[in-house]
Length: 517
Image 1 (cartoon, one colour):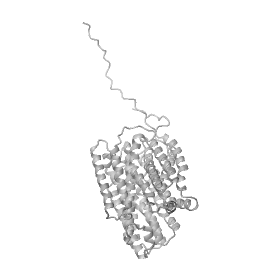
Image 2 (cartoon, helix red, strand yellow; image 1 turned 30 degrees about the vertical axis):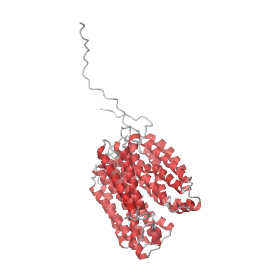
Image 3 (spheres, one colour; image 1 turned 90 degrees about the horizontal axis):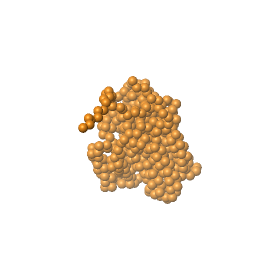
Image 4 (cartoon, helix red, strand yellow; image 1 turned 90 degrees about the vertical axis):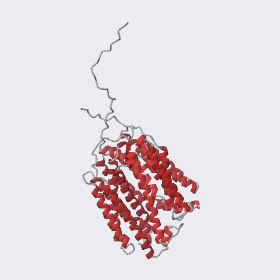
């Protein structure tokens, strides 16, 4: 019998660790700048197309001989853009920002070309839905990419640039759309996206290679995503049709709201039933994320509502022309940009950054009070001063709410958290516009199916002042709710400079390893 073979003993060694990937180096400001410029162009594309269409709608309706379905040109883009926003965030967490951003731009370009070549109103509506499907990811992904490459403490500097793009599109979109439609052809408002989109595609494809990508395994809950999108679509349809196509108390509006409620309930059940839901419970249950998202949603709702109804106020109450109304809107949007930029930069140095936003919201609420009390008796100069204060006030909230939200989640959840915040901002903005429209219609004695603009132009000065008094009162109340959410938000220290997060793109150059002790 052969003795068993004896394997010589080796000194005990700890288990070998898998070769660790070298830590990515922190990008310099010079490297970050071209990335930010590239994503700003993509943001501008998405934001511009929400406003440039407004002034061209009457011409489009006459061209196709169909005024009844004209509202769907705006609604279709809003529906798909809002509903797809959180999906882009989740997909970018799984597959990386670069590939998802390029996909969104490509879909947006394809939708723009389809809009420009649409042979009928129905074709245009479906093309706008496709365009919105691409546009829904541009704004959210841009904010996530900024979060990937810049630490929370330094991120406010770049969030101001995002506010500048939003304001430029809000003011410049209607002006550019009116010029192209009046002097050239309405289809150019869509054709202009082709060269801009191709430039954005090339620029973004190149600059996003600078950001390292570390893939993480995630499951995509398709059922949860579908339930969320359908619930949002049903709610947006109820808000779009209520008071216009159907009475608010009609069976049709009630049915849409009921369907939306059921779908929201099923989505909530889905969140509890699966291991990795579409919106992680760790994100939804985070009190900082919740408070920051709600504060940002309230503020965005007020800003969007005012950009839509303040020009009407200028025309029917202050008796300005359409072009003068557009110019008079600049103080509101300009102050928002300046305030957002200044606040973002100040966050880099302030320990108690939340108080800047609280002071801004308080100033905005105070400025809305005289507009609500004396909407028809103030001079245009005083109105512009008050709008400047309101714009400066709401501008302080955007960098604070976005940076705090991103600072409170892990890097692997950055995309879905930012996408969800943008989703609720868009959803609440739609709700705010519907509420303000209902206030104007109700204050002027309107009925379903009537145009707010047509009714306002035929009303008396007293009726107009009465209606817009409640518009400004509603804006003040919503800002007050946003201020409460901001007060409830915990003021966590902002993380300092750290390596980029693992959700962006493939590296273009090997990173410098960090020596290990």
